Length: 369
Ligand SMILES: Cc1cc2nc3c(=O)[nH]c(=O)nc-3n(C[C@H](O)[C@H](O)[C@H](O)COP(=O)(O)OP(=O)(O)OC[C@H]3O[C@@H](n4cnc5c(N)ncnc54)[C@H](O)[C@@H]3O)c2cc1C
Image (tube, rainbow, N blue to C red; front, side, top):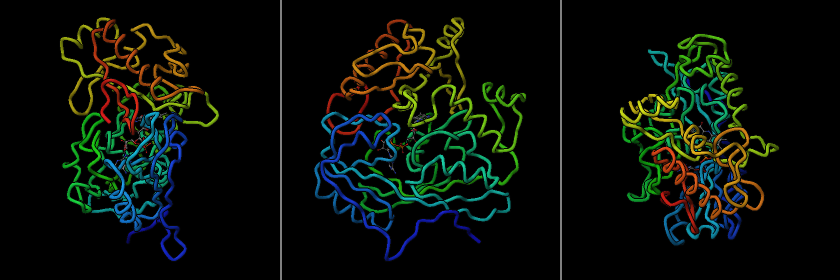
C-alpha cells in the first residue's frame, strides 16, 4: 500500500493561489538580483493550477516558472509575463516491485534537499549523491541535475507537465524528456510546467558505487566502494561545503547560482592537448569528454576573489561567480561575458553558461531568454 511521507494537505482550509503585482523577483533567487514581476502567482495547492492558466492568459508573453531561483538570472527590468512560483509540496512513497524498485512521486515544488533526506532516511538508493543541491524537485529534469556520479536521468521515470502548446496536462516518460548532460527538452523552453515527478529508487542499505575520487577520499574507501546512504550523503555535503557549494544564509559566498558555466565538451584531440596541460578531463554518462570549467577559469588568469564587475566577483572558495551588494543583472551578464571571452582567448575553449535568463534587460551574450 502507498504511504504518504508528507502529502500536501487539501481541504476547505487550503489557501488559494496568492497573486501579487510589482513584487521584486531578486529576493526569490539565490543571486538576489532582478527587477519586478508584473504578475507573480505562488502555487501551494496543485489543484489551483487552472487558476494560474487563466491568469497567464491575460498577461503578455510566455509564462515563466520559478522554483527556488538557484539557477536563474532575472533581468534588471523584471518580467512582464506571468511568473509562477512553484511551491507545491508532497512526497508519496510506493511499495517495492518484484525487482525491489520503489516508485517515489513528488510534487514539483518540493525542495530537492528534503527529497534526498527523505529517501536516505527510507534506505532508498539513487539520490544520495545529490545531497546539498538547492532547488525544487520540479526543476531537476530541466538541466538533468547531477553531481558526484549521479544524475536525475538515472532514476526519473516519468513526469506530468502542463503543455502550453497543447493546453492540457501530459504524461512524459523519461525517454521523451531528452535528458542529456545538464540539458533536456525543458531547458530554455517555456512550453511545459512540470507538475509531478516519479523516480524509481532501489531499497538497499547501501549507496550506489562511489565513482568520484574526492568523495572516495572523504570516505576513506576505494573507488567503486559502497557505504550506507547516509554516510555517502554526509561525505558529499562535506566536499560541497569546502567548495562553497552548499547554500547557507550567513555565508558571503552564498549569492551564487552554482557552476554558472557547463564543463565544455572537447574532442579526443583537444582532450589530449588539455590533459598534457594537467587539465581535469572527465568522461560523462552521455559518453562525452568534458574539461572542468573551474580549471579553465583559473587557467585564464582569474584568481579566487577576483573582481569582475561592480558587485560581481569570483568566489573566494571556488572558481565560480558570486554577487555582492549592489550587483545588477547587467553587471552579472558583463562578468559572464568577460570570463567567457578571456577563457576562449587564453585556452581556446568556448564556455557555455548553464544559467537561465528570465525577463528583460541585458543578458549574457549566449544565454537565450
Ligand atoms: C550553491 C549551488 C550549488 C549547485 N550545485 C548544483 C549541482 O551540483 N548540480 C546541478 O546540476 N546544479 C546545481 N546547482 C544549480 C541548481 O541548484 C539546479 O539547477 C536546480 O535544479 C535549480 O532549481 P530551482 O528550483 O532553484 O530552479 P530555478 O532556478 O527557479 O529555475 C531554473 C530553470 O528551471 C525552470 N523551472 C523551474 N521549475 C520548473 C517547473 N516546475 N517546470 C518547468 N520549468 C521549471 C525555470 O523556468 C528556469 O528556467 C547549484 C546551484 C547553487 C546555487
